[in-house]
Image 1: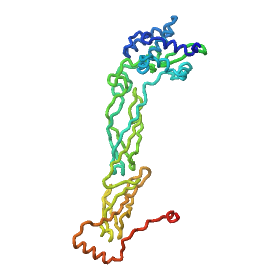
Image 2: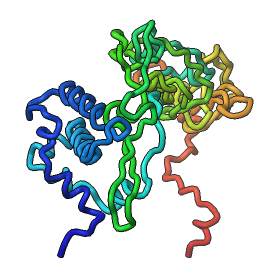
Image 3: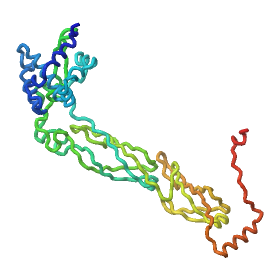
Length: 370
């Protein structure tokens, strides 16, 4: 059974040796391949050459360059050439024949990549917010060419193969008759223009790598692991394209005294037995200065004393959390003889006190579980 006409174009092209078509050695460099293609394309382009067979030769030359100018497809071709024809699926074939793909030249400027950094904060910086200046290594716009990719005083010139369209059109015989197809121009890579004098600073990239400072305004109330997004603060794109975004991961150092529960700060206050029994007034140092804490007579271990508005500022809205002070009654472990006698006298005065196992605190659901 003969091949359908729609495949014949690709089958004939795939049988030709691409290196022979371009007239280059198999170990030719990318630059040699590009120069050979441009020379042949100028001679055989249908707009300048109306001789019989010139159009078919132009198709062969263009296809050969498309394969050999791409390192991956060239490697596959050199290893047997299976991908030269086999890589065309049904979608690729119909896109090529019936108008798929990009129309017109593509922009050289591309959006830059997003960047990710981590900033380390103290609990005090989290509680009240902080302004930080950090230095990052990133892609910035080339100061020499300002993203144009060309050496100053020069500019890109219109591609003389595609005449600035970025596309190469060709006519192919198919089941539907003669069909016009198009593909990105191999000479200018679809840009429609060629950089004849690339900027020596960025090597025609339109950007360079450099270290720059970024001012960060960290709001109060952020939590460990939170990710902040700074628009347009990432890497500058190829060809001086727009910058990507910068993402900042927040890492909070543990504090030696205070913990955090939501927007509340927590700490433990060690209270001597006498102060717990008789009551006391003490002063503790917080993240924003000293504050007085009242120990009520008979205060027990595990009791929580709430100091209002001494926690972390809310991330959203106004106000602050509280400072939650957990009481821990400290029993003395070393007593002199006089202290021991005083405690014996105290114990004798409270001889009716018992040592007993405390009952569990039962809630409503526990009492009704029978």
